[in-house]
Image (cartoon, rainbow, N blue to C red; front, side, top):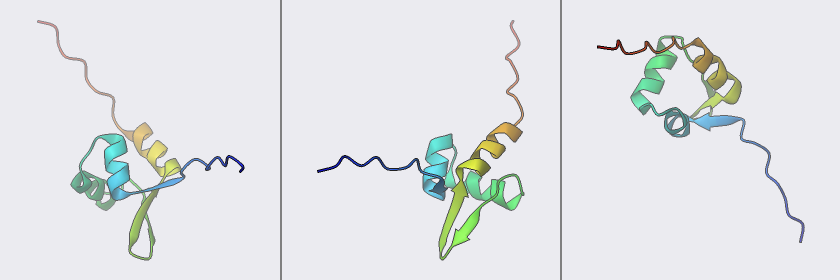
Length: 69
């Protein structure tokens, strides 16, 4: 029997994307609605490509450092 390696996943459903990025499903849909995140439809499935995930992450503003007291 041959050991097969599956290719790296290239797109994610909303639930997967939310879990990967520690945000809620609702926030994913907000990001799409506001045009900050691209999504694609295949039938009834909403998919986000790994390229769109990378672009979205790169577009996020940096976190501000907490002010030392």
